[in-house]
Length: 70
Image (cartoon, rainbow, N blue to C red):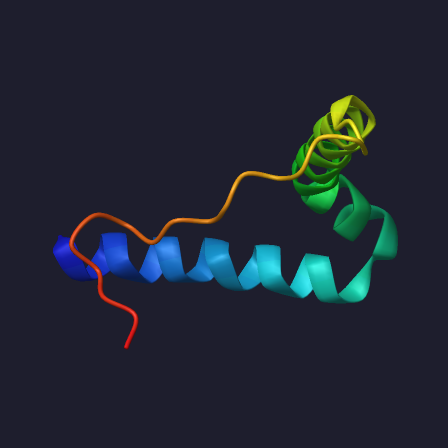
């Protein structure tokens, strides 16, 4: 029974991989969530870049607690 489940899931994954490789429209549909997250992240980065005031120096970067840079 377990072998059958493994074979079926493997066949489904192979079918998805072959579809992704063979048809660009399918590839775009599969990768759409990734691209929407990247657009959202870029929008937030752009929003943060606009709120930085050039006359105020940036805060110094501190290493995590307990880390030593030597």
